[in-house]
Image (tube, rainbow, N blue to C red; front, side, top):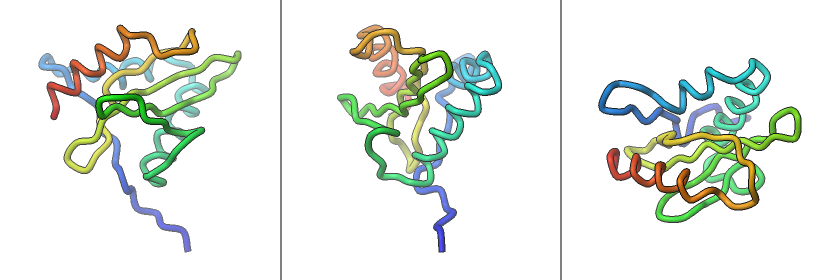
Length: 115
């Protein structure tokens, strides 16, 4: 029988002003892209620990959910762990091989706020 419990529930990082940047970013996408990213986050929630191709470690306690979108686009949702949850810190469309340093810096800044 399949285990239907979330091993690592997702929650959104919330700014001091009450904004959830990753949620806002996901809602700005097309229905198909939202569905793909949502399913990929769900794979991590239910399948943790999970490796490539769905999830990969970055550095300094950061991980990424890896999504392949329509039009050969690649999306990444960067998260950290806290209070038994995956905290979704930052998300973006990846345009280069390496994760851009400004995206990592922003995720690390947000991680420091929540851990």
